[in-house]
Amino acid sequence: MKCEMISKLIQGYLDDELDIPSIINVESHVETCEHCRKELQDLTRLRAEIRNKMSYHKASDSLQIRLQQAIGNIENKKKKPHWIQTIFTIKRTPSLAITIGLLFLAINLSLLLSLPSKQDSLSDEVVSSHIRSLLTDHLTDIDSSDRHTVKPWFNGKLNFAPQVIDLTSQGYLLVGGRLDYLDSRAVTALIYRRRQHLINVFIWPENTHEFQAEFNRTLNGYNLTTFISKGMNYWIVSDLNTKELMEFKRLLQ
Amino acid sequence: MGSINRKAQMADSLINQDKIKRFNQIALPHLNAVFNLAKWLTRNTQDAEDVVQESFVKAFYYFDSFKGEDGRAWLLAIVRNTSYTHLQMKCDFQMEPFDEKIHLQFANSSQLSPNPEELVFREIDCRLIDAAIETLPIEFREVLILRELEDLSYKEIAEIVGVPTGTVMSRLSRARGLLRNHLRSYSNSESTQ
View 1 (cartoon, chains in turn yellow, green):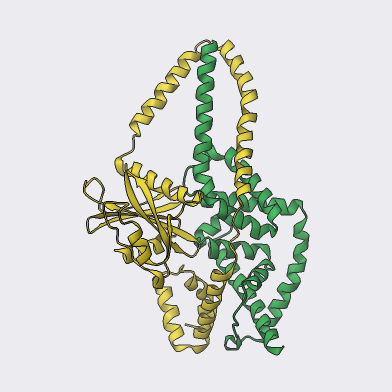
View 2 (view 1 turned 180 degrees about the horizontal axis):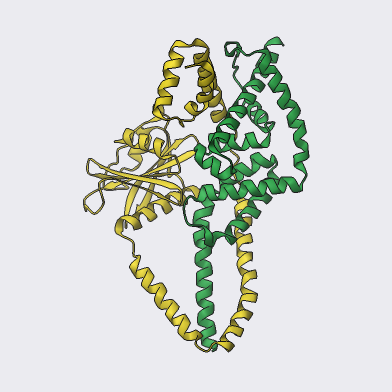
C-alpha cells in the first residue's frame, strides 16, 4: 500500500476508528516504511501531549447556582398564565374532576406496571451515588494513591476487607476510598481516575445471589458494569468509554 | 371546584418538581463538559457562562422531547449551537481572518520542512499547548475538544457538529497538522535562540 493511502488512515488508526483489515494495513506498512513509521510516532506523541496538557475548563460553583435559579424562574413564569387557563377550562368542562381522577389512575397503573426489578433499582442507585460523589465535595473519605493506606482505612468500618489494587502502571490512578451506602448496607467505594474520567468501584459481599453474575448497562450516559469475584459484588460506574471501562474491569478481575 | 383546583395545583407542582429533579439528574453531571466546550469555543469565561445558562434554559424547555439516550451528547450539541449563535451576535466571527493568517503561516511552514524526522519536541509548556489550540479555526477546535477531552467517537462528534464522519476525520487531521506545525515552529525558534 502506498504512503499516501496510509497517511489518510493514520488519523483513524490513532483514534481507534479503523476496521481490522485497515489496522493490519497500517501496521504492516509502518513496519517496512520508515517515513510512515516516524510520522505515526510523531503524531502519537503529539496526541499524547495534547491530551495530557490541554486545559479542561471546569464550571464554577456560582454558575451552578445561577443555573438552578434560571430554571426555577422558568417554572414560576410558566405557572401564571397556565392557571388562568385552567380556571377557564373548569368553567367549560365540569367533567374535569373525572379527567383528573382518570389521569391519576393511569399514572398509578403505569407506575405499577413499570415497577423496576431489584437489579434495575440498584443500577439507578449506583449511578446516582456516582453522580452525587462528583457533585458534592465528598468524592473520598481517604485521599491516597497508595493502596497500603486506603485498604487499612476501611478496617473496623466494614465487616469485610475489600481488595485494593494498584493499577497506576496501566493508567488507572487510585484516587482514594469512601464509605458509601447501597442496597441498605454500608459498602466500599474505591475511586480511580483515567485522564479526566473518574471511576467509582462499589464493593460488598455477595451472599444473597439476587444479582446476575455479570451485566452491563448505560444509564444517563454513564456506563455501568458488574462482576462477582471471590464472593464480592463489584459494581463499576463511570463516564469513561465502554472499551476502556471493560479493560479496567478485566484488570480488577 | 376550589378543592379540584387545589388538587390539580398540587399535582402540577409535583410534576414540575419532578421535572426539575429529573432534568438536574441528567444535566448537572455534564456541567463541566458543557462549560469546557463553551469556554473553548468562546475563549472567554463570561461568554462561556452566559452560553451555558442559555443552553440549560433551552435544554429545559426541550426536555420533554429528550428521549433519554445520551445526556452529554444532547447537551453538547445544544451548547455548541448556542456558542455559534452567541459568537455571531458578538461578531466574533469577523475575528477569524486573524486566525486564517496564522493558519496560512502554518501551512507554509509545513511545506518548508516536510520531513517528520526534523521535528524536535521540547518539553512543551501547557500554556503553549492551550494557546496553540486557541488559535485554531473554530471548526477544527471543536472536533479536537470533543475527541481529546470528551473522548467521543467520530460518529458521536459527527452528530453533534452535524457533518459526515469523514469530515470529522479530515478536520481532526487538519487540527493536528496545524498544531504540530505551530509547536514545531516554537521548538525551532527556541533552539535558534
